[in-house]
Image (cartoon, rainbow, N blue to C red; front, side):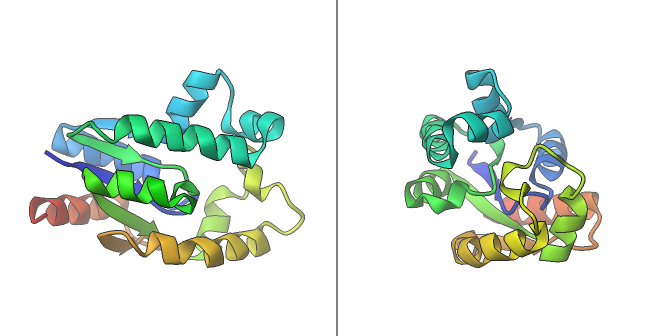
Length: 168
């Protein structure tokens, strides 16, 4: 049993879809950001503020390495996990990588009221979303499958992923 790894920008639905998919398949759900928060005893926003993005990315890579030997899980990753090529390779070797793709406008609408998103604490969050997507989309595109999430019901997305996984 390989893993199903969900990648995509913040607000693309990785956590919600991941939890429901794990329930449907009887798999364990793992959220890399939650692991980091538990290990550090701090929120992601606090880690970014106190240590900076570079140190956070180092913690993230460590968690991905730890997870690279497990099987039968649905893994929800942080939006920037793809920045480190090593993470992509580790996540893909043991699992089907699924990019949950959402438009910048959809992402903004989903996260605009969340203050726990450190990368969007800027004057123009929509502009920042577009900038970060421009950098990350070619990396997200290395996923095995891509699912557009705009306007699609969570249960339908779960069914699409489960069907793709059954053929994987």
